[in-house]
Length: 246
Image 1 (tube, rainbow, N blue to C red):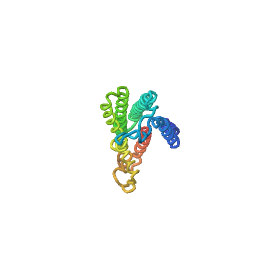
Image 2 (cartoon, rainbow, N blue to C red):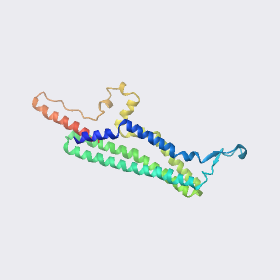
Image 3 (cartoon, one colour):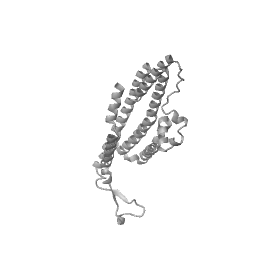
Image 4 (spheres, rainbow, N blue to C red):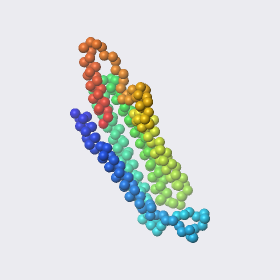
C-alpha cells in the first residue's frame, strides 16, 4: 500500500503537463535574466574605428559598476552556486533514498531478488556519481575562474585561459551527457535503442530480453505442491521491483 501511494504521489507531482510547464518557466526565466547582457555592448561607428579594431564596444551601462555587480553576484554566484547546492543536495538525497529502500527490500526478499536489488542500487549510485558530480566539478571550476577574474582583472590572460578551459569542459559534457548515462546504465542504452528505432529490428536480442534484469526462473515441476512457493516468489519479486524504484 505504501508503494502504491508513493507512485501515486510521484505521478501527481511529476506529471508530463507539470514537467513541460516547469521547463517553459525555466526557459523564460533564463531569457529574462540575461536581458542585461544585451545592454552591455553596442556597435562601434565605422568612422571611429580602424580596420583592425573590433566592431563593438561597451555601453555606459556595461562600463558601470552595476553591470559588474550583475555579472558577479547574480549571473555568476546566484545563478550558479544556488543550483549547484540544490543539485548536490538532491543527488545525495536520491542516493540515501535508494539505499534505504534497498535495505527494506533486501531483508524481506528472496536471494535472487536481493542480488537484483544490490545490482540496481550500485548501478544507480554509480550513474549519479559519474554523471552529476562530473557536471558539479566542471561548473564549480567555471564559477571560481569567473569570480576570481572579476575580482582581479589585472591577470586577464591567466584567468581567461582557465575560464575557457572550464567552459570547454561544460560544452563537451553537455554534448555527451546522454551518452555518459548510456555508458553507466544499461537501461539508458535500451532507451537509446528506442530513440534510434533499433529495438524493432532486434526484438530477440539479449539486451531486450534482459530489459528488466530479471534472472531466468527455474522450470516449475508439474507437482501441485511445488507451485505454491514459486507463486509466492513471483509475488515477492514483483513487490520488490516496485519498491526498488522510489
